[in-house]
Length: 215
Image (cartoon, rainbow, N blue to C red):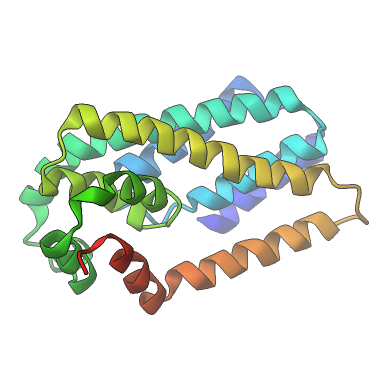
């Protein structure tokens, strides 16, 4: 799927134009699904944000950057709201499936469920938004731990906006640089690879979760 997305982005690059409303809509749906569909964590959300931001940077179009940030923030916020209610219901229905059971009730998240430090709601929602796979489980976890929807959705709005602003702006920065042909994409690829390796490591994810448990 990542290769198909990159092909699509390359086609936009070849046109050297601006994003169309259709492309904005596709990006919106991708992030909405990545956040709200629970088990769609395989969709490379951070890659989408950075790559789209870098294209806006290559276009030297601050208006595109602001529009992308808005689209991504709203999509992820709505996805979080869907995940909070619908996700909790869906998990109860399909938890008998082995893969899903392991995904939502693995040792890392069992530790979080039983030892969560309730003074760290803010840190959990904000930091979790920046970690692939973890961010899809944050709404489910806060629902399970008893955080009311009104409190959660306020935190989710702030975390979604911060995530969209930071990650998309990083891409814009790299795209805006005047570098030899292809160099900005190579730097971007190295950054994404580094993040991917770091967050795919179980030890790192376990240590990350330990930030939110009682000591």
